[in-house]
Image 1 (cartoon, one colour):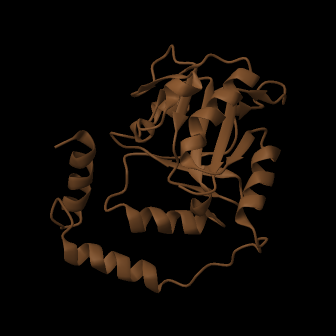
Image 2 (tube, rainbow, N blue to C red; image 1 turned 90 degrees about the vertical axis):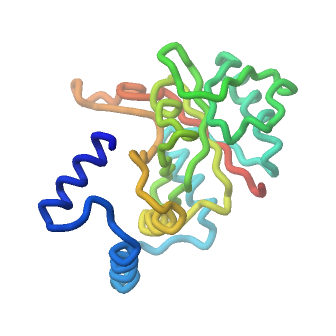
Length: 217
């Protein structure tokens, strides 16, 4: 049992419950959530992708829109070359089938290390209202790839751009049997204004966030 499991087990024991929830308890929770009224949400334009693009650019990120998943290496290469960045990156394993060599990018499919300057990830989904990416951590989706490198390149399908945070959370519950160890929300490059109210990018994470939206997979 991991430390996390042990903590939750102790909380459940204090509530008089078994260490792990059974199917009956989980179904009761799902029924309760489904029965809750939908909270008021801001009106959104008819095109979530256009709204997402506008929010992303307002957050000082950059964005490219491509036709197919196979175009990802070419798009990544063009961005790195155009920005004068190294053509080496740590990457999530889900993109291991793409032809990175043809694009001239050296990609290693692993968690990021301190010396990695570029990280390439996917995203569970994107939120149009705020220009935010939702990333769920896991053994094949290490959070370090989006947090440690100075440049974070995120790849998301246009079909997975949802209007609001609520739809993103519903998607997470629907597609994951268990809540991941961490869910990270990325809204542009890391920034702070703690020192003399001057906004500084890259204070606690990447200096740059570049998003590639795939029209079809």
